[in-house]
Image 1: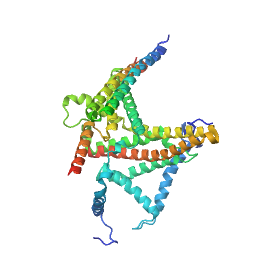
Image 2: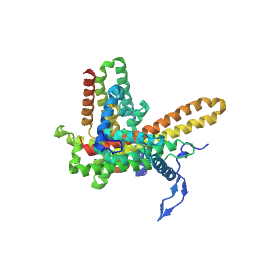
Image 3: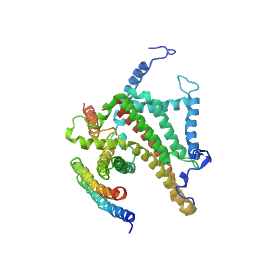
Image 4: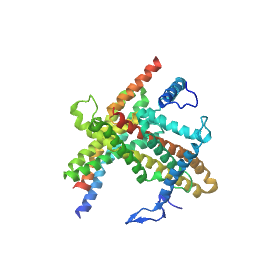
Length: 241
Length: 128
Length: 75
């Protein structure tokens, strides 16, 4: 039987080598392209005939829009709506990445730390740039709480700074660990079903069913958490308490 | 009121939305924000996983930062020791945030103060 | 014995110190849970001490980690 981590191997589909760098089009890239094209075509059709009373497709598009728009309004405020396209794209990309991974024989690109770290580091850099662009060097003031005694500064500032710097890592590791652990667990339990045969396999099969439902929930939840943390970080940069 | 064929401006839409939301939320406020805040969404397993991730990543970031500073300043191992300890402190403070359901914005003291004001408002709203 | 090998062995030995910290953290939370289970009203006053104890015990693990990392990277 294949090992439980075999599902995460990256297989090049179209080998491309440019100047010694491997730029092959892999199964991971294929899934990412799917996660971009699928919502793009969906929103193309959903907004093709805009009506006051929305049809089925338009309703789904509007619910998604409202969901993210409310998230930004609640966590960032009105000025955060400027960044709506980025956050919306992020949510749809991560959500579909997790969901496509739940299809049998497909590939979960969010189970690779390279992908999640790229997303999280991009968010971190963008948020930091926004913070400095909006507040200038005053942005550094954020690391020292108002009203705290000045003597505590040498301790508090490094702690908050490290806490700030660890954001992209905890953001990426959380998504990556959740997806990887879930898929390994599914694979191992599914292996029990095959190994134990028809009678003995019933019990693990029921467990696998339950875990699959849980995995769908976690896939949605992690996309939500990823997006809402982006909103909170953006709020820090824009509003600076 | 605008005629339907006239496009309403964004301000007007916002005002209308606020009106509708105020009406919708009137009956459902108690259910909307129960004790299960956003920070505590998910099971105990999820919280435990988050705590361990926070503890490990902050210490790792502190260690990496200190190692980088050491290479830069040639002060091995002083910066790494100090940064590792700060990383541990940051990890504990982040774990505290996760357990207490505080928000993840910068500044632990500010997060505690914001949660207290939020809960103070809520309890006042329920009693009043 | 080669110095490089001795470093690695030393780092491994230093990391053993984290066992004690692990036991300590487990002890703190176990006792905290037991206390809150017996007397739920004490939760708010006991919780703070729990966090302080956790932080201090965690710092001991960090000392072990510091020694191990110094041996690996700095020494």
